[in-house]
Image (tube, rainbow, N blue to C red; front, side, top):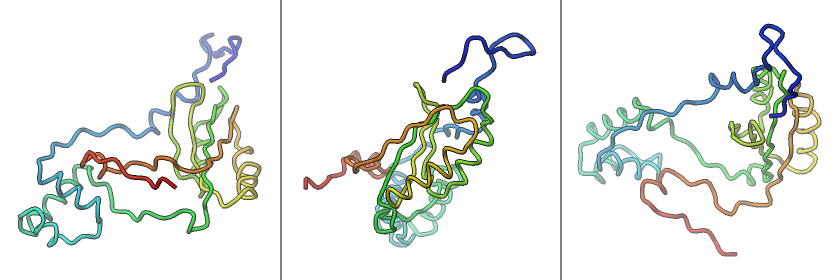
Length: 195
């Protein structure tokens, strides 16, 4: 984050705080580790393989009654370990084959709340993370094509006040896809085609 040494807070003579100092309220805090027994782990593996599997089928797989399995799953949901059930979409088939990463540096006088609101309002934003290093955040967007990227930059991102610097990194393709909880729980490594 660039800051001029001559910029001073008029109230106390110190340099102004970085707008990133307000990020504390925005960043998701780590959750407490949930104690899992082998049945909990097996249920998670089975749910990762097929989130639509019935409680009856899960019960058969782990040797318990369906109500007992239902209570375990409900407990894991209450503890925040299971945060939802999702559908994995093929972005290319949906018409958004492009993936672009945009590292962002904020100006010292940036309004963090306004920047986050404007970024969150962009439908193509799929992820926004706070990072260490020479950038403050990295945003990930899904795009249709070059014209879509151009419109995204010119009409939505560049007009945001308080962005000191951005870069655009256009993905050429995925080499290692995002690992899943299944991979971590089973200790397996996904196999990728060698095309």
